[in-house]
Image (cartoon, rainbow, N blue to C red; front, top):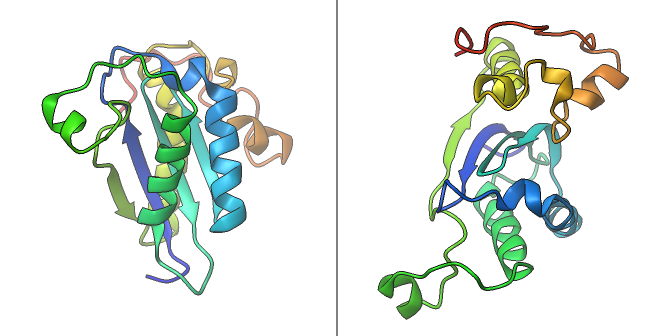
Length: 165
């Protein structure tokens, strides 16, 4: 849907690696470079060591989110040293072994769906046990929401992360 809003989950191939947070500047630069060529708005974004979640809104004249995600993944992978182990299939296809080939995508359907996905993205570091408070995770647009006074700094407070879904 042109100009649509989408939720994404993008995973590293090796979920034991911490490439995304270890190379956060490279990831941010990759996103900036793609945004210049293929504009989009980052409604929300969280980067965890092995995966990231984002809600993006595309310009009214396009629905081509696959090219944006493919280029972000490509630029990030190209900037990394070649240390990953490659399967025979990836070697044959001249692919890097950094990202899972696919990603999870969901078209945001209404305001309630939008708010639920924004909350999901922001609470994700807490859900995975990386922090005890959402505000303590540095790689999140949560801080932009606090700065814009959309969310309070203590949003989601000190809840038990076992209860977060």
